Image (cartoon, rainbow, N blue to C red; front, side, top):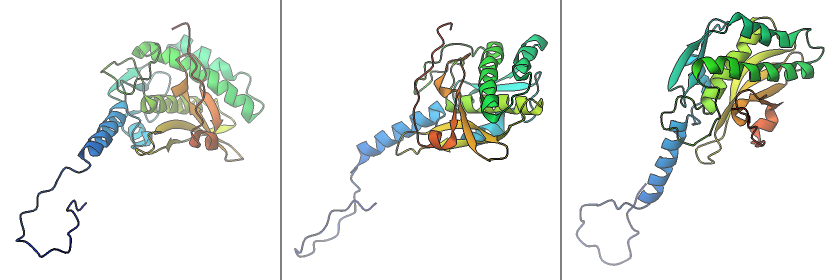
Length: 232
């Protein structure tokens, strides 16, 4: 941006070396600070898909999971579920759901159980403070960690043949640095209709079902009430 002042109609004076004044420097510092905060918190303009590709287990099974934590996958921990843990989770889908809506309810319960069972192995089954900036606390998750982990859980359920009415879609991303409403979410796609549903665990403590809502509702940034697990 040209920061030189507009000249008047006076006779020209000898041209002096241009000195750029720090006009707007304070604004730029504020914007930079906000940008750094969002990047550190992981909920940045970088979609969670990038983190999913870089850090998640591509072919998860009960013995091979990788969980992100500490904000923006600062920490990645391999996790193996016990046979008892996996039986309890897979039992959620017996008998198979008779509708897509019923299956989404079961998916929500299974994801809630996974956030506790798998989360305990990685030290993540604790109350989430949702601080903007995480001070290197490995027990805390941001929207990137939540999206990577929950997408891993959904792929796990799909690969185990437990989903009849849905397939796992690519994570969705919304917001900009300017609007400061950046977020990510895993996505389920309803077979037959192609309708997308956000599976957002960022508004629920471990052990509680995520918000599963039409993707249009999620993209409109309708913020739900936070679900706090009193047992944590």
